[in-house]
Amino acid sequence: MDILLNAVTKYPLVTAFVVVGIIMVLSTYIGKIFNNRIHSSAIAIVIGLILAFVGGKYTGGKHGISDVEIFAGIGLMGGSVFRDFAIVATAFGVKMEELKKAGLPGAVALIVSMILSTAIGAATAYAFGYTSAVDMATIGGGAATFIVGPVTGAALGASSEVIALSVAAGVVKSISVMILTPFLAKMAGLDNPAAAAVYGGLMGTTSGTAAGLAATDPRLVPYGALTATFYTGFGCLVVPSIGYMAIVALVG
Amino acid sequence: MVIYGLALMGGCMIVGTGLGYLIGDLVGIDANVGGVGIAMLLLVIVSRRLMDKDQLSKLAQDGIMFWSAMYIPIVVAMCARQNVVAAFDAGALAFVAGLGAVFAGFLLIRPIAALSAKSDPLPPLTEDNPAPAAAMAVPEVAKEVK
Image 1: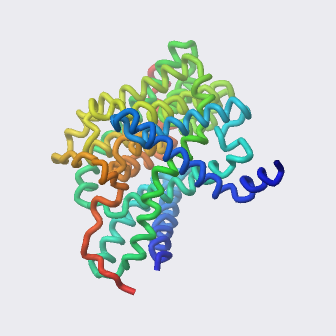
Image 2 (image 1 turned 135 degrees about the vertical axis):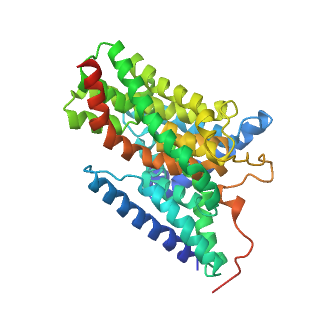
Image 3 (image 1 turned 45 degrees about the vertical axis):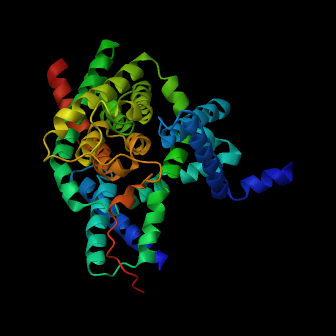
């Protein structure tokens, strides 16, 4: 038993390659059962999320299945280093003309979404009884991404309970983007590079858009990822400053 | 050599990250503003230049393509390490705030995308064209250059 355990824990990253490989095989197979009407990468992503849920329940940790010792390599493989490296790689071969076309709507989407997400988050907070401007801005930031929320909260001195809520709102957003994108893509017109750039700017969560586009059409990834990667930094800049001041002006 | 491709990509990423933190610093926050996005733009521009001059060998390109093709498996691993339990246990406030932002976003894709010059839909994916992201636009010009 110990020997077996050693074999799978000695090289965590290698184990992760094997595990993800098996998930991909399974999802291709399941995709065939559904007559390929669901993209196999969408199925693989859902399997990943289910594993994350099981892992989280089992260990009580924050990093899904990678908190289980034999799956520790998943944490490395799915961490930000590999993710960002692979995202940059997807830009290889992209046509500059398409990027230029996508630039303006992408930037507009970024600004519109930042205002809208913060407003929706802040209004929801207000409806649930968090009526101070600090709490509203923090939860509004969480509705932007799960990084903007705590950054805003820390800057404004929000309570840890409110900061936790803002992270939760951001995690809900990120995971629902992963799951919903393949189903809503057609309806939302997400089938060309400009729309993908807009989508990245509107959703903002890098992991959400990365997975959502992978499950929809991998060729759209570079356009969506390009705008999404500006979102969190932009949010950390404007939500605790302009966003907070706007909320103060509204609720006093 | 394969490593040339990785080094090129890594170089773009380091410069991008540096610029991202520099932008953050200039506006007074300790955060990386768009570093990955800048790296992507750099890679698009620099690799195009190199390929036009025939200086990016097939092997070097393969090094980049490998990581591009690894994108989906990496995303699957990323999903498997998300804090899904927290999302499910989040409670009504977090659900309404998070989902509200997502649905509002989906409704706005069409109107905002309409601002761009018409961008054509990509051809449909087929069984034998599962197209890793980069596969669509790799020019055939790049000859083997050692």
